[in-house]
Structures are given as C-alpha cells and as structure tokens.
Amino acid sequence: MIDVQQVTKRYGQHTALDRVTFRVAKGEVLAFLGPNGAGKTTTMRILTCFMPATEGSARVAGFDCLDQPLEVKRRIGYLPETPPVYQELTVSEYLTFVGRLRGLGGKKLSAAKDREVQRLGLGQVRHRLIGNLSRGYRQRVGLAQALLHDPEVLILDEPTVGLDPKQIIEIRELIKSLAGSHSVILSTHILPEATAVCQRVVIISGGRIVAEDTPEQLSARLRQSDKVSITLKHPPMDAAEQIKSVVGVQNVFPGGSTGTYLLECSLGHDAREEIARLAVTQGWGLLELKSISMTLEDVFLQLTRHEEDLPSDGGPATDRLATALSQSMEQSI
Amino acid sequence: MTPVATMIAKELRSYFVSPVVYVVGAVFLSIVGLISYLYIVFAGAQAIQLMQVQGGMAQLNLNDLVFRNLFSSIRFVLLLTLPILTMRLFAEERKLRTFEFLMTSPIGINEIVTGKFMSVFLVFLGLLGLTGLIPLVLSLFSDFEWYPILTGYLGLALLGALFLSVGILASALTENQIVAAFLSFGILLLFWLLAGLGSLLGDTALGQTISYLSFMEHFDHLVRGLIDTKDLVYFFSGLVLMLFLTHRVVEAARWR
Image 1 (cartoon, chains in turn purple, brown):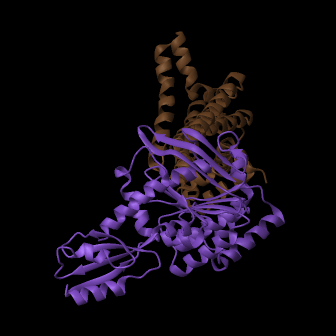
Image 2: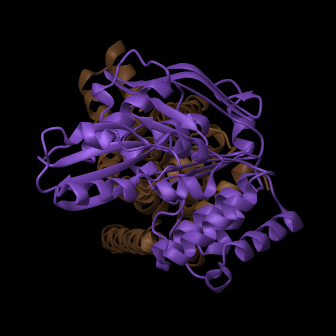
Image 3: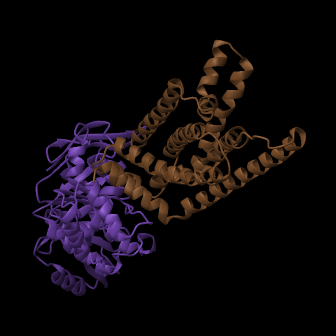
C-alpha cells in the first residue's frame, strides 16, 4: 500500500532522511518510532505529497507521490503534528469544509460527519467554535478530519499528544480497530504506544532506519538470555570464576563498581537461588541480587543515542541492534 | 460544490466571523463618506461664489467637482485598507499550520489561490457597492452624467482587484501578517510613485514604459469615462501575473 524506496531528503547541507526504505502492507499498522528530529515528520510530509523527496521514490496505493499527487492525496487521511483546524469555524462547519474539499457532498457528507462525531466523541462540541476547544478536543477534531473521507491510508503524526490517559486508550483502540481495513502509519516517541497498537515498528534515528521488526520480535531478541546483577560486600579474587561454575550461568562480566558483577544466564533457567546459596555459604556478604529487565525502551534509547558510535556504513539492522544491546547491558550494570 | 466554491464559502465565513471585515468596512465607509461630504460642501461653496459673480443659477458640474476627486481619494483609501483584508489569506494558514492541511488536500494550488482571491474580491465588491449610495442619493437632488461614474466604478473594481492580488502575493511570502500588510503597502506605493517618475522622464521610451507600469494613468482614463482596451489589458495582465506569482510562491513554500 505504501512503498518507500531509498528516499533521501536534504535541506541544503543538512540530510534529514538518508536512504529510507520500507513498505506497509494493506491493513497493516506501522509505528514510526524515533526521537524528535529523527525524520519522522519529514517522511510523512513526503508521503502526503506536501514536499518532494530529494532522491528516491515514494508510492501510495500504487500512485507516485511526485507524478500523481492528487490521486495520492485523495487516498490519504493525514493528521499533522499540530491539528490543522480553523479556529473561527465550528466543528461542524470545519468538517463540512474538509468533506467538500475531498469531494463529499449531500447525504454522504452528513453521514460521514455523523460517523466521525460519534466515533470521536465530539457530539457535545459539535456546534462550538474550534478556537474555544481544549487541546484534546482539537486533536480529536484533527483525527476526525483525517478519517472523514474513509481513506485507504492514514498517516498520523503523534496522534495521542495532548490527550488525557483515558482518551489515549480510546484513540489507541480506535486505531487498532482501523487495522485490517486501513493501512496506518503513526509516528510516536512513546514506546508502549507502538507496542500496544502496531504490528510492526520502524525505529528511525538521524534520518536512517536503525531497526525494523514486530514488537514481539524486538523483545524476543532481548530475551536471548536473562540478565542478573549481583553486588557482594567481600568478593574473593576469583568470584567471577566461582559464579560462572553455577549451572545456567553463561558469562560473568565485572560491573562498574567493585563487587558488582553482571551475569548472563541461559534463558528460562533462573540461577539466582543457586547463586544466593553460594554467596551465603562462602560468606561473600551478599548485598544485592536482581534480574535486569531490559525493556524495548532501553533498546530504543541505545539505538537512537549511540547512533554516531555505530558502524556508519549501515550494516544490517540486526548487527546494530546487537551492538546496541551489548552496550545497553554494559551500561545497566 | 466545486473546490473553488468550497474555498470561497470557507473564506467568506472566516472573514465574517472575524472582526476584520467589520472594522475595515466601518473605517473605509466612514472615511469615504466623510470625503464625499467634504467634496459636496466645497462644490456647494463654489456654486454660491459662482452665483455671486455670474448672478442667477450657476450650473455645477458634479462629475468634475465631486466624483473625479472622490474616485481619486477612494484610490488612496483602498491602498491603505485592502492590504489589511488580504494579509491573513496565506500568512495565517502558515502560522496556524493549516497550510500543510490545505496542501495535502486533493485540491490544486490554482483552486486555492483562485478561491482566496475571489472571496476577498467579493468582500471588497460588497464594500464598494455600499459607496454606490453616494451617487444614488446625490442623483435625487442634482443632475450629473452617470456614464463616467459607472466607468469610474469599473476602474475602482479593477484597481481593487489588482491591489488585492498584490496583497495575496505579499501574504504568501511570509507567515507574519503585519509583514504581509506592510509589504503590500510598499509595493503599491512604489507603483503609485512610478507615475511621478514616468512623468519626470517625460516622453522618452523609458518614461512611457514606467508610466505604463503604474496604475495611475490607466485608472485616470476610466474615471474620465474612457474605456480603452489598453487599460483593461493592463489591469487583467497585472492581476493574472500577481496570481501566477502567488501560485509559484505557494508551490515553493512546500519545498522549504
């Protein structure tokens, strides 16, 4: 449905996007994850034909964004970062304007308006001026605008910003319900949102795609081994060797401070009990023993923060992911 | 509704819910009303003088004494007021980020520019139409030629259209409304002053070219009751050029 091939965007000397390539299948929900300034909005602007790419091609529903922008625009519902609302219009007038711009009229238009007002809970504010509405309502009006003509492709730039927790859940449910019938790209810097709503996650940083996978797979990679950290008061010289002899412990790394070690244990084999017994019987003075849970958040931070340290020739995303993981592990000690 | 009609309806709605049209309209109409009152009083004073000199009833030419002066004054008032009407058209869209929405809607830039121009032109025609009360009321009490008044109104409509198109171009160039308004004042004043420069250079080719570029001479012909194709071509080509430039500027605004 969406096919982005080797898209590069430069603003003068600055490269905002560097050979970005990804696809979104029909009915799929894709999260675009990245810190501010990573190139999320630029990608979306290229897909919505707001600006052309410097190099590469972007196609939506089979139409090229550069050659047939009107065809692309007809098939896209777009919610920019700032909800594009006219403050001097009422919600109803605004939706009428939007619908007519997209070729809706008469009964079809009023049916579409009723559907979105209902779906986004705008009934109470329908006849109020948008300028007098709160941020959350404006955001919902913006979403109603994007959904109004029931487009095949939805592009949502941080759709849940400015909403309260209850509304966030509602909007996420709404987006989930759109999967299957609509292709959705949503950008966010909130990880749980990506995992909660999306079938696939693209992590972008510094204009490049650094990882792309399903949320489950990304987490699965983390769980190749369980990590445990241990802190001892009186560690013997050969503590690392002795700990390693415990069944299930694969690797032992000395930690940042003295007496702290990071253990890599084989998956599904909790060695903590055995290690504790060993430490107590040997009189090492066990101060702390905990398993380290690495969340997707850690990976994300690593992937995006250490971008410069990673191989810049852009090796396979999995390699970089692995590098990031090991860095993250060392840091979490 | 066609996309252009949709744009016009939306822009008109925006104009009339904001105070801008009411303030601009009130100021414009009261100034024009005051000016015409003054011209009429002066004309009356001259009539009394003439009567004293010539004795009996003096025949006053209201077309010369009132309307030609009035149209020239309205020209100046338009220069001051129309940029206020146009300044929001694109600058506001860019400031409030609705520009991105418009550009990603399935509507061409042509249609956006045309719709915006037509809406502000309609507002302007409405205001101009209200000044039509002045000749209508005067016609109850005196005799004058209607023909030069109608061509004068044609001149004002064309001049207004040109001013508005300059204003739209200025509005597309910036996201600051004050800058947009000031820019269109500047451009319009410059074209006003070109007339003076042209007459200074006299009958040379350069002088004539510069005079042609200024709207003053073309407008004067219409006010005097002359409908010349050359003047109509000037106004229409100027209008089309300004709207075309606006199109280019809007198009280019996406690339940055």
